[in-house]
Amino acid sequence: MNKAAFAEFHHFIRKTGHVIGYFVLSVLLFRAWRATFPQFRTPWCVPWAAAALLTTSLVAVLDEWHQTFLPSRTGTVADVILDSAAALVAQIAVFAVVKIVSSFRNGREHGGQVEKTCY
Image 1 (spheres, rainbow, N blue to C red):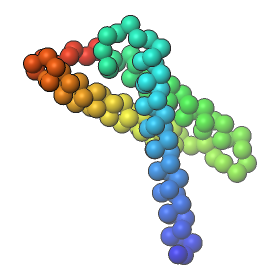
Image 2 (cartoon, rainbow, N blue to C red):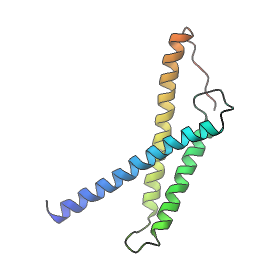
Image 3 (cartoon, rainbow, N blue to C red):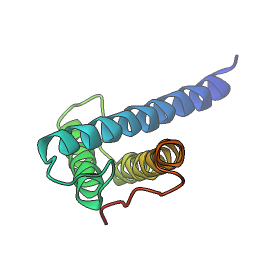
Image 4 (cartoon, rainbow, N blue to C red):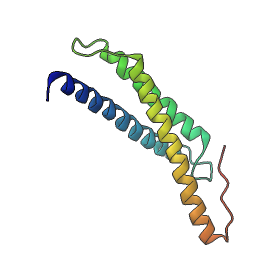
């Protein structure tokens, strides 16, 4: 593999790591906010998703800001956008999974009535 191909591959691997890492962080933060504020009797709620998205974006901003102080690293706005986009996709995925699981469970247990979601 020549240097140019390796550099491109390395860039792809690093950015994929960003996406996977911040996706997982956003899902875990959703679960943490849901456990912290359980007063809503629903599996999904906008305040939990918004808090997870904002918290993940804050971590991305702070991580990139931290990198500006390291001589071997550079903090970029593009990485913050990429990380925040991964967090947004994670919240959309959480919503979709919760809806699918809820409709399956409610369809079997309650004769087809779908559980309401907190918006």
